[in-house]
Image 1 (tube, rainbow, N blue to C red):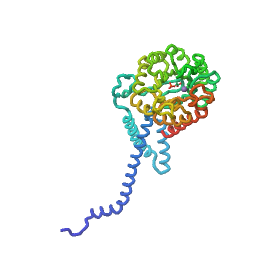
Image 2 (cartoon, helix red, strand yellow):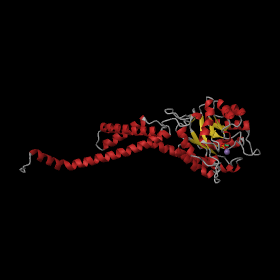
Image 3 (cartoon, rainbow, N blue to C red):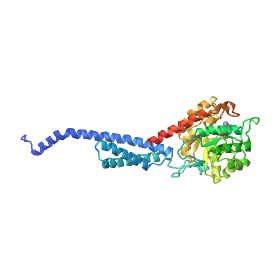
Image 4 (cartoon, helix red, strand yellow):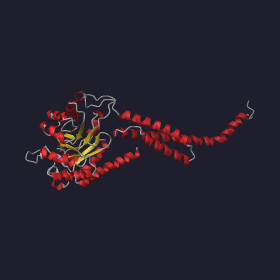
Length: 388
Ligand code: PEP
Ligand code: MN
């Protein structure tokens, strides 16, 4: 039978409960909130990991991390927390954050070679192989910065291309486009100025520190085009022209390979394979829209190909919204979409006096429209840099 006497131990436990119970409950609540914040932080770290993967950025950035740790220490000091405690805490947080980033990258990285990819075995993605970066003048396509390539559809005169180059340079363009050999639907339309146009183009770009991209139409011209241009374009109509692909590849210049208007993604990769097989690894793929039943736009821009290619190939991918949309007013939003889907850049047409363009007038951007696009890109990049 119990006597009702309270032992000294029980009394001490009761006192403990009264004195510490409320305080313990409140510190437990703080710990739970900290755990919730940690879980939130891990989610953000996962997003940062994905963004770094999309832009080929390394997970670690030691100077930025050191800078952030110092800032946290001084905030900690103002709150009465010794800096060694803050530093230890940050180390734990950073380790957990990097773990989350690595996990997100391994989730995003294809784990196996794509199925049925033997026919493009050099172009296909391989586990552990880093993405290809193509150097064109100052630009590194696939290196993390979204490149805006611009210039007129065709080189129309020496004066026109110099004026276009002035505007392109002012907008921050580093690779000037312009057709000297023009693939036209009607043989009666302006076919380009050929070699003469190529020389004007090269002079206009090089004298302003820009590189040149221009189309090569005939295998016999590949050498001459390569003498003047840093990047050789294979147009959509010629995507499967094997002798042209081989001749362009053998110049050793990087190749911009446009997608045929009715070519499947795998056929496109097989075309790239022709170039790679010549020992030229510098290939950039360019999505420029497909021929469909839609008549509001010139072609239908297949942005899903950009996402699909990320799972299939290590080659960089850019987008040509000009030939896809066929209308100047659609080009800026499509550039934003190309950026959002993870393309490595865009190539757009701009004419110094768009009303006078000799070809593709309807889709030519004005110089100020081009500047809005490069400004968009610059803004997004600055915001991203500030956040990472
Ligand atoms: C061009 O870029 O000049 C061109 C003709 O484009 P596409 O080959 O995509 O039609
Ligand atoms: Mn054009």
